[in-house]
Image (cartoon, rainbow, N blue to C red; front, side, top):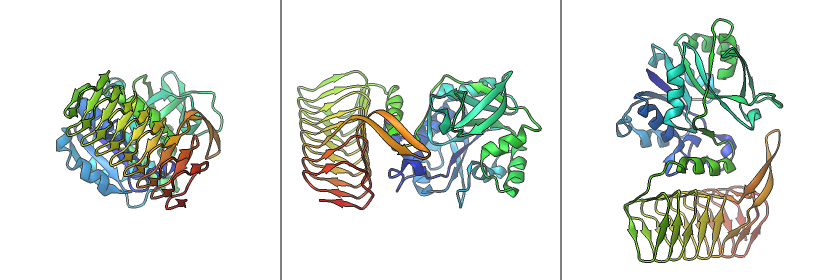
Length: 396
């Protein structure tokens, strides 16, 4: 069986973190999100993979290559213009001749998630999960184990069952896509509605890992969930006086200086330098070649590659993008925040800040909870940042 992974989109709601990388390549627990999909497929014996790429496709193709490094054979098809999920899938129509899987490339899933589908699938099947926020997804109605209806992003929903976007389909599905595209419908949900006139779609409910990131703050629980499976290992240098508890992965060439305290689950990636006397607390990922200064605390945060954080700083419930440079005594506040999203307001119980790539922040800066700072910004020393800062902005 082959699998088609839809990885052509940008992930606009995750801006500014998708300015230079597609959503599927954002790293969580030191891996691109898309890699979790590939590994879960391979672990289930599915090694023939077609990736539909588009936005920033070279980033994807250079990382995965022909798939050999991941135990797979990966073929690529390009979606020149991103019109919708069905249009993206249609690009792979010449690559499959038997039943195949379709998966979005922007979720963290486990081996068991895929096996739940494989062990229970029929000719047409969809993997379903439960969500406390069904209005962000396609809400499923079921009758006797079969899908009766799918309503995309309803304002209100009495059901907590949502589509994961993971399907087992037959090649004739491409005929339905072609028919709907003639009518200017480019999404898979519309095609499913048409297909249900002729075929039954089995709904398979999974309790296994399926986690999506829609907005920048969603990357924090996504990273935390991915870290739950990290194994304890160390290929770096650990100086005297370091305390390490729990499952902590320390990459090759990393240096943990004296007096540091590290508690897992956590990942400190290759070439990074921590401390001295720094604290890395649970659910934290530190990317490659990142430096965390003395007496700085990082907790439940995603810190990407090439970041520098000065001394006596605290980073909690935050996302820090590639190449960000932060001075000493940096103190983002953490608390409850109402975030404006499409169609309304999202109430976040606890949130720090989000800083996009290549931004420079001076010493003694305070950032209010929930603030998003765009890419390539400059924030002067002593500033108090209260509101969102667009990319390429200077705050002095």
